Every structure is written in structure tokens, then in C-alpha cells.
Amino acid sequence: MNTLIAITGLGVLCLLFEILNFRKAIVPITIIGLLAILGLTVSEFNLPESYYNNMIVVSKFSTVFSSLFIVLTILLVALAHDFYEDHPTKISDFIAIKVFMLAGAVAMVSFGNLAMFFLGIEILSISLYVLAASNRMNLKSNEAGMKYFLMGSFASGIILFGICLIYGAMGSFDIAEISDWSRSAELPIWFPIGISLVTIGMLFKIAAVPFHFWAPDVYEGSPALTTATMSTLVKVVAMATLYKLLSAMNIDTNEYISTAFINIIVVLSIASMTVGNIMALKQTNVKRMLAFSGISHAGFMLMALLSISTSAGSLLYYASAYSLSGIAAFAVILYVCKNKDNENIENFNGLGKNNPLMAAVLTAALLSMAGIPIFAGFFAKMVLFNQTIEAGHLVVVIAAVINSIISVGYYFKLILAMYSKEPNEAVAKTPFVFYAVAVVSILLNIVLGLFPSAVLDLLG
Amino acid sequence: MNNILNQIGIENYIFLSVILFCIGVFGVLYRRNAIIVFMSIEIMLNAVNLLFVAFSTYHQDAQGQVFVFFSMAVAAAEVAVGLAILVSIFRNMDTIDVGNLKNLKG
Image (tube, rainbow over all chains, first blue to last red; front, side):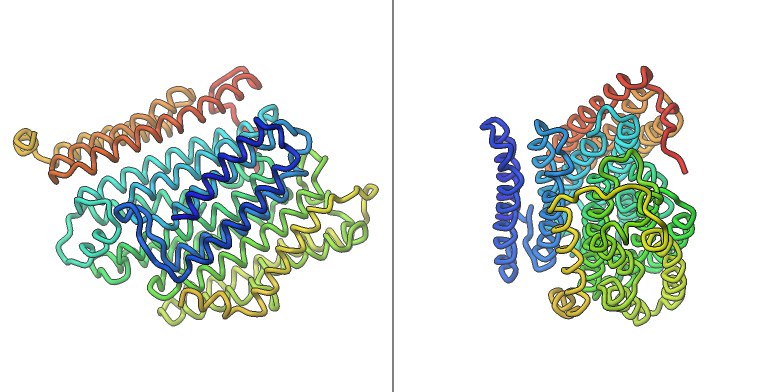
């Protein structure tokens, strides 16, 4: 609860700095503020409590995921200073929108009432519509913003309808009450329909097949920093929220729903992985490739829903591994494509000679995403696969292993371009923050890989 | 209030809002004019609001009506952002036909 208030306060503060003309200080102050909020969040870890008639419920799950979101936002805000160099007058708006987006994300994992869930998801999405279209002179950015807006508000409409049907079945918005009543055998048919609609809406936000078609276009058109936000922070937020929602609805114990639901998740998970990976193979634009890679990672994360009562820890681990390597990769992409109008693979030719450190970071990030050992991505996949086999879904795991092998194909395409091709132009000077963010996030990723139990045991 | 609801039946309210919702969905999927698409999204959200109020009376519980205020406020904010994006598209392209948004492909 304090986290949420503090984040919103920080957002307002960012806007005030613009008025007081403190533009230069805005990024450092926001980072310091977010670090303080991170400390505050961690201190609430062992103090589960609910506030305002159960509107907000602070639990281990919510504090851990909120901390992850805050870490990701710190890294993204750190990148913002150089990215928005050309628009010094707008930097406070961009930072403030990012901080408000974080408030939405935290509300989404700590909701105790469907009203709070809906408000959280809308705060998150509306901020993102603005960020996606933020390069307003650029036609691609406009188009990406419009497409994202149409898909996003369509999905919100579906989520709202689902919430309405759940309310109709249960007569309450309170998650704890809904959770109690959903154990009973006699439920109106509205309840499963409502859950399905909410799930469909969330799958839109996660960009899982068959609701993924907007993702490549939007990722390609948006400014690169927004793409980084969407493919790391937002995907993880939506996944954590869907997990929390479905486990609160007792999707696994209610035999009335569970069989059909589990089958659907199995199909969606396999389809997301396969479609994402196969489409990624033929992409030449790196942002588009990472969009498809994100779709396949959404499929992997959906596997966590198959053993929903025990997989909170492994979902957290997978989410942190994926998002940290994603941010490392995007820091390098931002550096390479800084003054270019596209993000094609040719831009990465010879990066291994021009800038060995950045090339090494990008290689490490891609290897982590592909699931090669010592990086966190490998252990994340291993834990998740283990859990899924224990839950008795061998088919999904076989599909997932095959897909991991396919994914190596397109990740290595980029790595080969960096090391085996000749550079086509002179070296540009790298701003220090890009190095710092890339190295910090990849180091965090490796540390997670070396000590998996540190994260896995947090949520049991 | 409850009397009327009993006479009409909650099912009919659900049918009405499902029909309105589907009209909205088809509007989003088939119309090409961005303003009409926005209106269709509003129809979807308002169909849900109608159902919220009906359920609220059905359960004799005010929470549903309060939720309607939230969803109306959110819908207003959403459309404000959408219209802003539309204005910048209109400035760059001189059209509000979403069928013309074809720069991103692959």
C-alpha cells in the first residue's frame, strides 16, 4: 500500500520538477526515489496486510513482484535520459508517465478487489498508449500507437465484460469472497464465462497466440525504449496478474472448470511457442524478432498456469530472468540504433570488433533467452519444465524443448552478424548509462543463474 | 426497482447487453473509420455498464453501480488518449481511415 502511494507521489513530483525547471536532475532523483521505494517494498515482505476494505492486499506475492517491477523501471528510467536527448522539454512527461505506469503495475499485482484490478490494468495500458505514440511526427509511431490503442481498449472491454459476469455470479468484487465461493459446486454458468473472458483479455496484453497479431507491428513502430518497456515490464506484469487472478479463482481445484481450462492452456502454450519461434526465424528487424521471441516466451510463461498451486516461485524466476535479459538486449539495441531510422540486423554487423563489451552483453542476453547454462534463462526453463512434468503435462514440455532448440536459430543469426561480418561504419561514442544498464542487468541475470534458490524460495 | 427486474428477468438484461456488446465488437472489427471504431468501443463498454447496473439490482448490492462510475471515468480517459493519437495521425496522413495504416508489415 505504502509502495503504491509513494510511487504515485513520485510521479506527481516528476511533473512538478518540470514546472520548477529541474529537468537535469529529474532522472537521478527519480532513480533515487525508486530505490527508496524498493527498500520500502522489501521491508513490507513479511508483513501481509490488507487496506481499505480489502481493496489492496499486500502479500509475499505482491511485494516480490512489485520489487521486480521497480527494478525494471529503474533500469528503464536510467536509459531514458539519453534516449530523449532530442526532446529535453518532454523528459519529465515521459518519466512521469513511466512512474505512473509502475503504479498501475503495482496495483495489478496487489489488488484485493476486481475494481482495483481493472483500474490497475487501465492505468498501465493508457500510459502505454501514450508512450507508444509518443514520437508524434513519426508515422510508424503513430500507427503503432493507434493499433495498440485499438487492441488494448478492445481487450479492456472484454476484461470488463468478464468482470461483470463474475460479479453477476458472485454478487461481490472482493477476491477473497469470490475465492471462497468459487469452491462450491453450484455456480451459475456466468462464472466460467466470466473467467474465460478475463483470461482472453489478459492474453491480449500478454500477446499469446491467437491474440498476438498486434505485437510485432506495435513493437516495431514504437520508439525503442517503449518497446523495451512493453516486451519486458508489461509482459511480466500481465503474466503475474493473470496468475494471481486464476489462482484466486481456484482454477485447478474446481473440477467443473479445470479440465477444459487446463486443456486450453496447454494448446495456447504450445501454439504461442511454436508460432512465435517460427515467425521469428524469418525476421530481419531486430525489434520485430524480439517481439516474436516475446510471444514464444509468453508461451513458456503460460506453462506456469498448468501447476498453478505451486508455480509462483518458478514464474517469478522465469519472469525475472526473461525481463532482465530483455532489458540488457534492448540497452544494446538502443545504443546500436541510436541515430538510425530502422533496427535491421545489418546495423549489428561487426559490433564484436567495434564495441566488444556491448557485443558480449547482447550475446549473453540472447543466450539467456535461448536457455544456455550459467545464465538465468536456462535454470528458469529447467525449473518450469520440471514442475510441468510433475503436474503431468509431458506433451507441453516436449514441445517446449523443441522450441528452445528452434529459438537458438534466430538468436544465433544476430550473434553471427555481430562477430563474423565486417563493420560498415565508424564507431559511435557510447553514453555511459547504456553501458551501465546493460552490464548491471546482465550481471543480475547471471547472479540469478548462479543462485536460483534465492528467488525460487521467496514464494515457496 | 427489483419488481421490474423480476418481471423482465435477469436473463433478458444479459441478452440485451450481449447483443449490444457484439454490435460493438463487430463495429471494431469491420468499420474502417476511426471515429466509428471509437464509438463501437464505447458501445462495448456501455453494454457492460448496463449489465453492471442490472446485476447490482439483482443482488441488491450497490457495489455494481459504484463500479460503473469507475468504468465510465476510465472509458473517458481512454478515449481522450485515443483521440489525441487520432489527431496526430490526421496531421501526418490527412485521413482517419484505419485501413490506411499499413506501414508496419512483415
